Amino acid sequence: MRASHARNLQNLPQYVTIGSCPRNTGPEAKGRWVETQMREQFPNLPWSRTGADLTVNGIHYEILLGSKSNMDRHAMRMSDIIFRMITFQ
Image 1 (cartoon, helix red, strand yellow):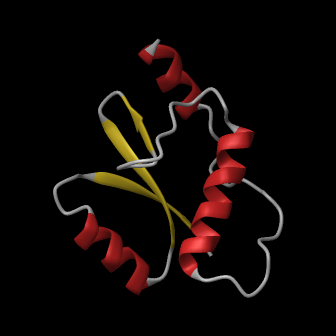
Image 2: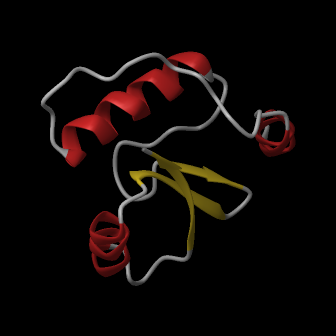
Image 3: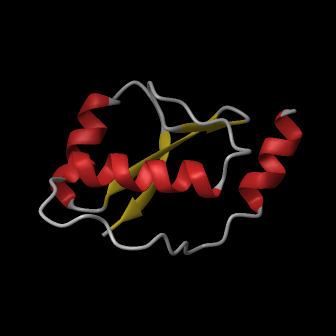
């Protein structure tokens, strides 16, 4: 099962188009919206609601707004986990 997750992850495009996020939303709301869109577009990946958003073969991935303050906030909140960032603007 893990090998299939790794293959699914390797096949992800570098850029994904998911539409427009609702206006007037803060970074957390945008993050939840983007994560929901990604979950729907890639349902075969092992998504998690707690901790890192996605873990494949021991590698953690986190979906987050690419602003410095948000990256700093994630780094502090998840200081005990090494994770790769999937950012959006």
